[in-house]
Image (cartoon, one colour):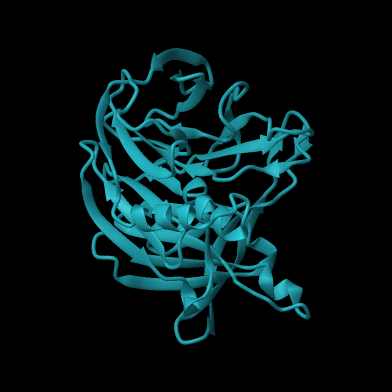
Length: 324
């Protein structure tokens, strides 16, 4: 048994203010987690959390391809289940309401969803109906009612971001285009050089988007633009609301972290820093907490650099953050 090369820590707010409203988060407790195997590649992004406070994290083995198992941990850090990710798209999974997960596999023009039970067993598989605009799946999420949201990007011909809702047996319910995606698509297309930094940056906006299920029955899809844009989507494929989240101090980039709990929406940002003198000041995470219905800013935090790893879970009243 080996330690994960990271720390599981509960962060809590101190009384030390930073700026007008930003508060610093420091580790309140640290729990070492032991798992079988060796994972020099560390933690894969994004991570996940469910309504019971259980944590889902994929650990990366040595070698190419970001290969490694997905673990479900209890809120205390104990390993509860292990899911085999072999053959699945790189770190493309979503948490089911019962503690199981789904993973997607692509073969030619067909896409198959494998459904894992809560004990880690690979159960049934469903073939996904081909949508009107085919696209490569990049984000997955499961609604409380069992429907699935799959979002991604069409690469040929042309770049088209797309989001689709499927029922539990793989039938297409609706394919939708989010307002704001056309602007991203245009930014991808205008560059003549397919490898230009600008084009790759805009492709990355779709590739590093994050989708999670909220505890209110909706799925939240975040585009990591600056500021971040979050869409709350129903199982019928309707956009219930669009929320813009600004980083603390208005400077920072979204860092895969998105959580919704008790009408609180949290986005994790990484500090934008060009300093070559104080590099330690750049290794910091910031969190914006907003009202999940209105988008009103409620709180802003910055994590102590020592515990500024990927966000796992969030709990409000008072605000608490679980990170690796």
